[in-house]
Figure 1 (cartoon, rainbow, N blue to C red):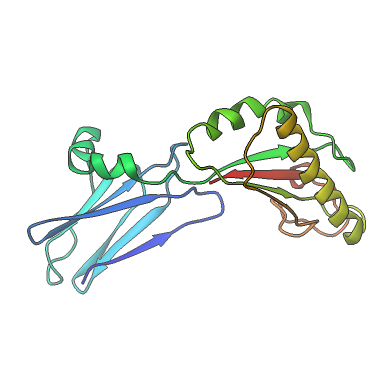
Figure 2: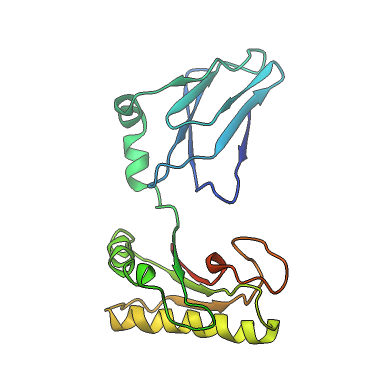
Length: 202
């Protein structure tokens, strides 16, 4: 039995692994997500193991007595010919946008306001989109105040999206306060990258 183990970090995006049998042989291919990012996959059995960690790398395995072959790049053409039909119906991976805020407020930075067209462009790719809007703060200030501020940021982002034309009713608005920082810091530290809302499309 061939074992496939997926290894990911917080900065790696979702990956898609396809397994197909051509006779007794199994092929595992690592495909990038829409942003070009990948994680890594370890393919192992009793005879040995191989790791693939770059886009379109493939490993073939004959049976449990045979060591997985050395990774090799598979062409886009071959991937399309073998699994094109599956890829066309596969669900899209979630897409997250990070919206940053001015210190102590629910006012977006100008750079983050400029992301709204990209969010709407991405929404068009999802036939039945679900949207989650999660507010966060840095660790400057009291935790209770930050919990309220992060909710205000999430609600403000929702209002701005609706004012810009958002018509999706499946929207979840959450507040994480100063918990779950993007950049871990000591208490009391004002970290701009933690003053954010994460808008995720599924």
